[in-house]
Image (cartoon, rainbow, N blue to C red; front, side, top):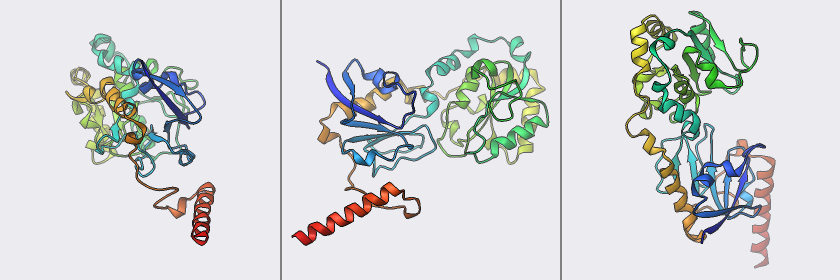
Amino acid sequence: MTKTVKIGFRAFGDNFNPNNFLPIKLLSDKYDFQVSDNPDYLFYTPADNTHHDLDCIRIFWTGENIIPNFNYCDYAIGFSHLSFNDRYMRLPLWATYKKALDLAINRQDSITKESALNRDFCSTVISNAKQTDGVREKMFEILSSYKTVASGGKWKNSVGGPVADKIDFQKNYKFCLCAENTYAPGYTTEKILEAFASNCIPIYYGDPLAVLDFNPKAFINAHDFDNMDALLQRVKEIDTNDELYWQILQEPLFLPNTLEKYSDQKIYEFFDNIFSQPLNKAKRRFYFKPYQDFDYRNLKVRDIKLILKYFFLSRFKRKKH
């Protein structure tokens, strides 16, 4: 008999389908998941500020460059290289892109040396040019000073409009500029994986610790260079040396233990530990409502109302006694 688990979701987007959510897909044989407005377990993202209303097991899930606050959540999935007993699992976004992961793992079977070398220079797909630290835009400019960089996103689009399939687009180029929005240790999204899946050599910026997962010989890491000119010189060296380019393209993509760290089995074990316990045993957070610490500069109207309500109720109770 399967155990019934009432779950809820907040701020996962309008097109979110719980049936396609990775933990549900992996554990559906063992648990009967029922989506509820009054859940025992709530999955929420950084875009949500309403989870404080629910006194249930809270599981923070992020695809953004945000560190979990364990005062507010019982468990968390994130990018940072943290260790917090059974409360946290590092699951970089790229590891959840199963189709691209499969293409990357098997990429050497899908390209020949001749076809790899007979491609245009470089591509990129950038749509968000506002919430960035500006580095990737500078990388685009310095690379474009050498040869044309085809832009398939909304930003500086040069191919007649945003591309429908990012990987199919990138397959036509030797290199791929795949830089994150911002610099942060551990923050590795799908960008470098999709470049690998496209049989490109990634020109990567963002996570200085990406070399803990990916073979540093398989990509050009902007963090290895003191300035943009030095980065460009390395790109030129590889671009003009066919044997060197092919040698790098043949490098293994992942370090020996990478795929095991983020395997379906590891994800299964993390969530099975949460759902298999009685609810009172699964709780991990210790703070009392509504808050223990405040960031007064970033309080929202809703937060202020909660604080005032809590304050006046406390005063009223004291007077009553």
